[in-house]
Length: 308
Image (cartoon, rainbow, N blue to C red; front, side, top):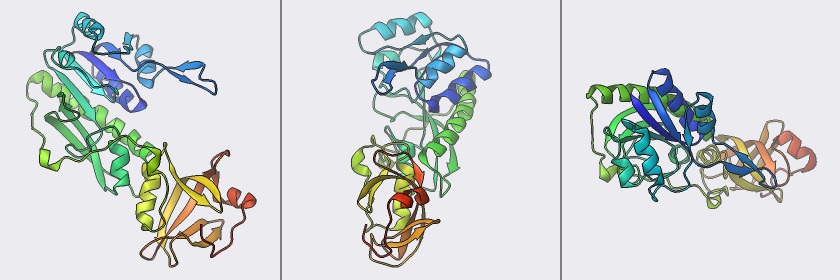
């Protein structure tokens, strides 16, 4: 099948590679514009999907706008039978959705109708979900609201971080996409409207989500640490030093929430709500590199029983 692929980050790369490996003709790739990086923002970095496409000699298009007619003209010239979208980062206007004969399908990293929006993987972890997955859906004008074609689920490991789960879902998405495109090609793909009463949202993350609240239970805080990686990261004041928190473990413990129960080679154990405690294993003080707690304690001595 002749397919136009739209995607930007690393998550979308396995889907593109899966289509190529399955023998489909990827006639072009749309990706977000290169981003300035570096201390002085004077270098441009290509998105992972662009780099992947160029390695296969696939033409790449990086329109700044989608509603001025230029992108639509390019798509009509490419004449795809199907458009596949995976974490492209743009809402497609109706004229583009209507362009290919088989329409546009999206690889979404949740079990829709749960977690519509920009950060479904993060919010699944933040909310303590034990399972998530990938949905392939027909695209509609409303965000992530199209009819479901196929879904596949996986368990979320108790210690799994958002980047780790993203990598697994990316591979699952590529596999499911190839199976679904084959069904679309045969005309056997199912189409199930989403249950609007079961919709939950996964809005974009912000730094207001970062501060750890020791009056919550340790598992909730552990989920917060895992879910906010790599950005904006959970944060806490440790001995008067503002730190990003990267690795934790929930445990049992008794004490006033926010009280330091233990400090040593096994980390910092901080009392939380309901007889629980959070052990911090890795952190990053402002202006420093990420480090194990033992390295932090070498320059920031703490006293058992002090309030953090």
